[in-house]
Length: 358
Image 1 (cartoon, rainbow, N blue to C red):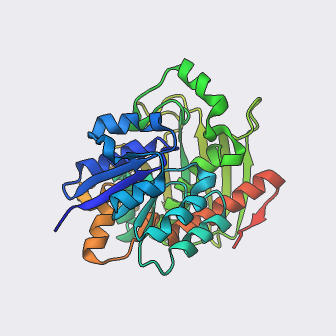
Image 2: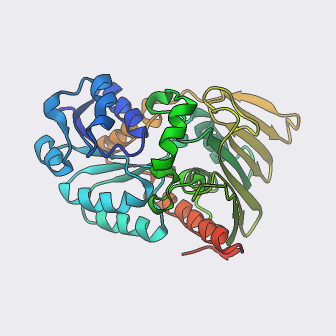
Image 3: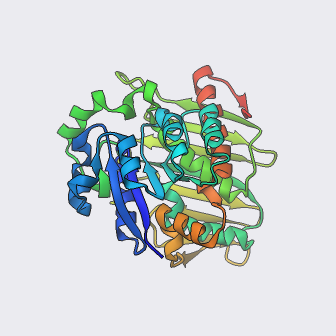
């Protein structure tokens, strides 16, 4: 069959470069076009992937009409996710939206409504969902290795969203200081802050580990850094019918986890009725503790098939097999994650415990 045609539209989030690389390296994909209102934001992609001048646009409509893609990658600012789904949904394409799902639950529901009836898939890309330790952890949970999951402990983040660009290329402190006042990541109106950027990772993958269970109520606290209108640190406690779970987000870790794991380590600790699993980002093993091995055992992470390694490969596999998008990147699990985020955000603003918002 002919190759799947991919277009990348809106480069607000630097993850666009990473997602385009997945398409570039996939044997059955072709990047047919890219578009952004700010031409210089596309320069890295043009160079890295050999994109011709004819395939570069500043108008998304002209981009779609000229290239006729099968799949569109979207990386807008968090508060514009709903707006961009409305713009793209009518073009008869599958959509991969870079995390988080949305800036609010109502926006997430509007996005789902826009896609209903199109016959096309909407996939929410959570990069942590493709990490081998977390995939291995889910397999062990499904195999009953730790019984029923009763607690999820999540701590994750990095030095900050401006310290690196696509392909984890580091920036200097001077570059960060220059970008910070004008970056959407630090603007409340655009859905900035560590809570809205990172909490959905923990609540969505946590919901996946819990097989779709929802909490009853949520309590959240955020920091109030001087001179900033958004948080750089949040701690969220979710109470379930059985057990408490904690989700913590942090911009400002001592090191980035992909270079040197900071302390606390970034990732998950899962507690079940029959054991525990620690699953840290980028680790080559997960640690399983159960009744047979109370001292714990390091288990090598699974060697993943291509279809479980990134959003492009996974969506294409689903489309070719005519199977639905499932797991943490599905709108079903992601919506529950968004419910928890919405409730946490309200809790932090009102400084009180809030029942889960439906």
